[in-house]
Length: 86
Length: 167
Image 1: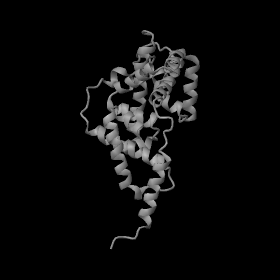
Image 2: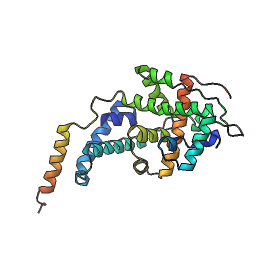
Image 3: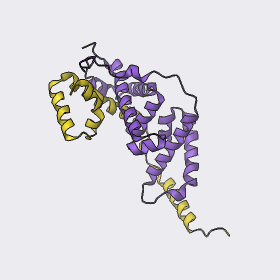
Image 4: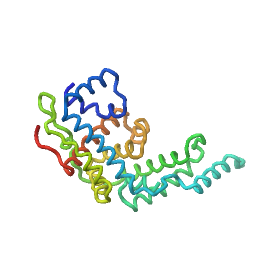
């Protein structure tokens, strides 16, 4: 496996979606290639930093408000129980 | 819901309009809501869709080429640029609001089709099939765009946090 090949498998590696043979070759390359180890570390950090930056300004609770959920569920329940128009 | 729309549209007024449209869609589609799934998740997906609809109607901004941001390799398959691991610096600096704004700015520099896939998959946590569905593309296309978006974003961050010269 070359550095070019390894770069192509980074997402599958991080998501644990590599087949066993490719994963073995990936890890063997990492053992001998310090440059790819550095790239992998900074690639992972890129994903973490992106998530952290996008979610940092979210309100404390990203969940839909309980009152809104109840209102929607009530509307839905009423719609199902209402007799059809004649 | 407003946070979701803000992330995708990057504009407060547009985001508020998208939330209103999402609520209208939600009430119209209330019959299709399957009680078994989480209502919050259902609303989230509707907000994503409303934002994407607005995004499609907006005029495209000039974009950088993604190709210029992807890693380059020598003939023997080695990386053309010796990468640095700037993780400690980045993880420390991202604690500041300025750095988080800078990172969001880097995400915004990605061409739209890559930025949206990155937001849907990594930030809004849609799976590949869901992202493909809302974008109307194949799952393979989503995977390729996400992969390229990751490399390109890493490159933009590396320019800020420090990268070595040719290897």
